[in-house]
Length: 233
Image 1 (cartoon, rainbow, N blue to C red):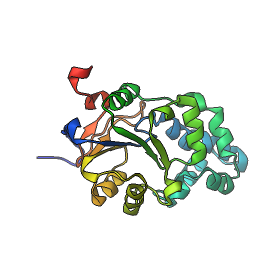
Image 2 (tube, rainbow, N blue to C red):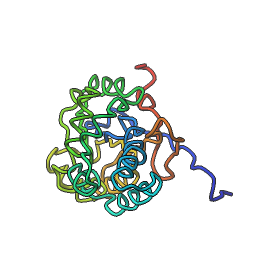
Image 3 (cartoon, helix red, strand yellow):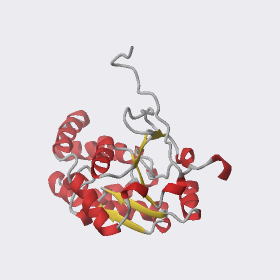
Image 4 (cartoon, helix red, strand yellow):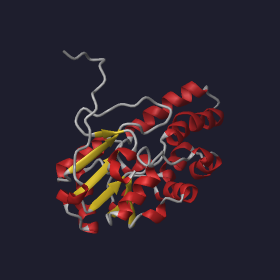
């Protein structure tokens, strides 16, 4: 008997690499530690917003969280220009000030090397705004591993929208049945699965500072080493 407070049990990924041609990878929370983003939007921006409007940091946080929620799952949520205009703050400049917090998750580089060795097509597919992408690629140097990097703004829709995946397939021409997608957002995986992508994996440890939480509906991993066959370690 399950209770409402019981954590989901881990569903391990089960697939053969011989059945895959294409690997689609999210960036924030999947390849990169989401602690940077959580801290930036939930602490750093409220601190600056509170000074601007002479209110407490907690008041600023509550107001901003409500405003974030209004545009969640849309392109506005990741549009730094939108937030700079809305909040009266230079969001890209503020991101640069704390870019030392940007970090790659453990075992990501080993996984990218493994995919390269297996001659898989590697694509970085992110909702992140192009300005954010530039900051993070400069800091982490992960861009060189990918055959192509696509921001949602290029497609014109957020990844949570099923039509995003239709347009992405038209752009990249991948085979749904031979494609793996890894993402830390279940709504993204829902849209991709509804479109027909066969292998969807949930990243259960998006932030190094928050508890692991497995998906009830998707195979989950904490680290990408779990997707590398043990014989290649």
